[in-house]
Length: 112
Image 1 (cartoon, rainbow, N blue to C red):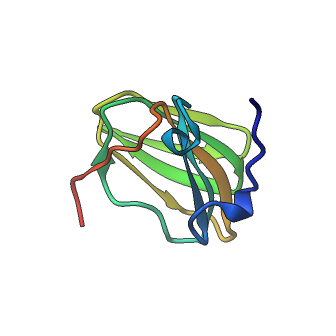
Image 2: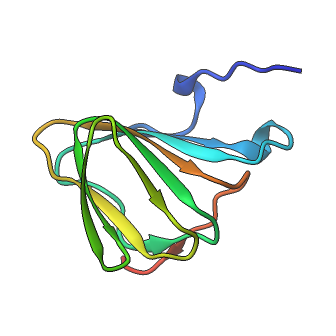
């Protein structure tokens, strides 16, 4: 059976978190994010790939040894197990969707 989930009903304030396993056997989880300038998560890994869809603004990613400047309309793919982080390096809030290819998020934080 189909379901409708309102983003505003998901946990979080600047980043709303959808965990697939909460909705049955849904094999994906994601954040609907609005990241303020200068903010972003610290370095971490996942045992699965993560896909970032930048909708508005600009983000600077560190993926392994690479630095990637990403802007609206770009998609960044981080392979499983690769350390990564991002920072909003723009002057406005960046809007993006961060897709975890797993029904349950698993994060190994490498920095505090």
